[in-house]
Length: 69
Image 1 (tube, helix red, strand yellow):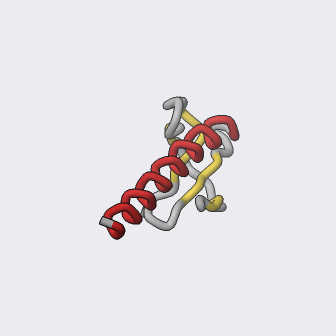
Image 2: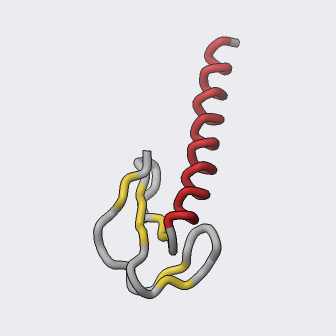
């Protein structure tokens, strides 16, 4: 699961909508990513998180199916 990273991003772009974020940005990091992902709002964070969780489920299901065959 993604977890929130404390710290300040200078100037960054939102990973979902591409908006430039200058003030306090939400930063999240997962176990498989080296750099935190920056979001402009909780709404963008939820959109990204739902896509990320769906892709993680696909990877897990694919591994299980390969092991059964």
